[in-house]
Structures are given as C-alpha cells and as structure tokens.
Image 1 (cartoon, rainbow, N blue to C red):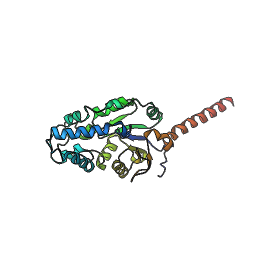
Image 2: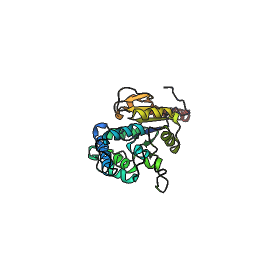
Image 3: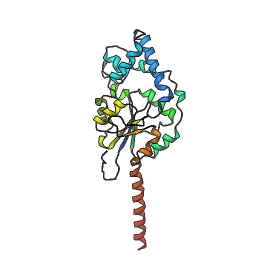
Image 4: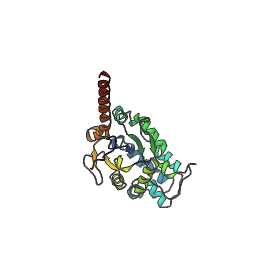
Length: 256
C-alpha cells in the first residue's frame, strides 16, 4: 500500500469501524440470534413459507447486503422501526462485556473515530455501551443516517441504502466529510471491504488471518490493531518527539 504523505506526518485522518462482528467477535452469538429473529419475523409478520425462510433469509442478505433491504426490494411493506425492535429486542447482549483493551487502543489513537454500521441507532448504542466504548467515537453512521429524513420518515419505502453498496460507502464518506485516501476502514465482511476499496478507502478485514480481495490488511482480532498497523500511532510518536526537540532547542536558546 502506498504511503500517504501529509504536512504533519500522519498517514490517516480517520478510522472508520464497522460494528457487529468487528468490534466484538462472531463467537458472541449475537449474529446467530439476530438471524433467527429475522427468520421469526418473516414467518410471523410476512407470513412466508416456513420451509423457504432460512434459504431466502440468507439469499437476500447475500444479494442486498441485509435481509431487510432484500425484503423491501421484493415489495414487502413493514415499518422499519418495528422490524428493528423485533430483530434486536431479544439478542443475547449479556454476552458482550466491557473491553478495556480495545477501549485503551481506541483512546490512544490520535485520529477521528467513527462507527459505520447497517444496524439501527438503538442497537448500535446498546452494543457500544455494553462494550464500554460509548465515548470512544466522534460519531455514528447507521441505518437511520442513510435511510431516514430529518423527521425520521423513510427516504424510500422500497430501497434501503446499506453496505456493501459503494453508494452507501460514498454517502458515509460525504456525511462524515472524509478524505478516502486518508481514511482506514475496518470491517469483517469481505464484500464490504471490496466496496470500501472501490470507494478509495484503505481497508482492514477483521476476523481473518488472510487477506480478501480489496483488503490491505487482515486482523484475526481487532485487538491486533497496534501490532499490524503501528503507523496509526506513528504520528503521535512523531509529534511527541518534535515537542521534545523543540523544548530542548528552546532551553538551549535561553541558556545561551
């Protein structure tokens, strides 16, 4: 990956993080429970054939980025907030524990930090609070950010803007006023990583030990950030070194 040179020596201005299965591991069971709740919603409220629901749930997720987006594209009508409340209402949040290691890593980085997720704001806030990371991020770009108007009314009844569409990533870049060449994007989804690269971002796939198409780095765990990407902290170290040199120079001048 080519180095990006700037006036202050920093390679990145912003760290853009996915939420689910990125800031906490897939093994938490939240992902599996979420899928089960989506399938239950499809059965209970959309009255789909029970034998078809598991396959359809997965196919829509793969084709549209989220099962919800796929259902809307097929013409199913339902309230966005009610869907999210049902799907996230009984997740095993108790499996998510405060993560002081990740908290310290995030707070030690000098860059802006933003969460970019397909999830709704209530789920996002609950996960961050469970992890003890609620105050580690400058902002959150979530389902409502991309799909609701200022009055919380849906922008479209049939189209959901979400990752992995490049359009969604470009919208997030615009909303957060990011320079893609100076932003590094962390996500567990190979499709999201490929789209992030297409949008011009530096990319890190999380939860894997091998690179996927479009990924610049691979992390088995988000806890491995500093070992794999020391350049995130290089700017801070350089600034400290320059301050020491300036102080030494000033002291020399005074003594002279």
